[in-house]
Length: 236
Ligand code: TMP
Ligand code: ASP
Image (cartoon, rainbow, N blue to C red; front, top):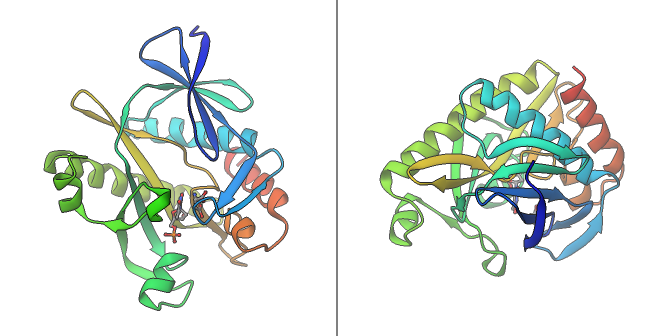
């Protein structure tokens, strides 16, 4: 078993540690919650455990569909062993239903179902408020080659198709979500997390929000929504 070594990186919602094995890291999920690029701060009870559980479950599920992910195994309630990658500093957002910044930018009513999924790239940079970019920025800034963005787009679209039907079968709507990718040699892997911090998920019938929007917009019932979502994903 890889032994936990020193802290490599601390982000807003996670810590990453080196391990005794050069190609493996430990990703620890925190209860701390932020929104609007860190401007709003708080915490969500049991979020670290819940996001670790949901991410591990979904990574394993996606691996069954031959999606390469950085996940190796769960090692504690809020920690997973992951593959060390060169992270591509791009947030890939997939949207099935209008919400969040899409509604603001294009004046679309929240809840409008997209006729075709939208795939967007954002530069991962809080100081710049994650500006939207396109594939040409990714090439020009040296983040990814055309072959790599083709692979990323293909994997992201496949993940969307798999997860949309996964959530649908649980009477949930996968509204939108954010992915991050990393490279190891020439291979691209899904990295980071898939959790209520990085997805919008609504109840199919009531459209009740079961994700971080409850925290972002002070809607109340945040802790309960995270627990409900975990149970509806894992115990189905
Ligand atoms: P947006 O509507 O604010 O652009 O968010 C789209 C999706 O991406 C939504 O599911 C939340 C997720 N997201 C993150 O995971 N991290 C972020 O920093 C932002 C802005 C959004
Ligand atoms: N992840 C960003 C933050 O922590 C933005 C968000 O999720 O709303 O500030």
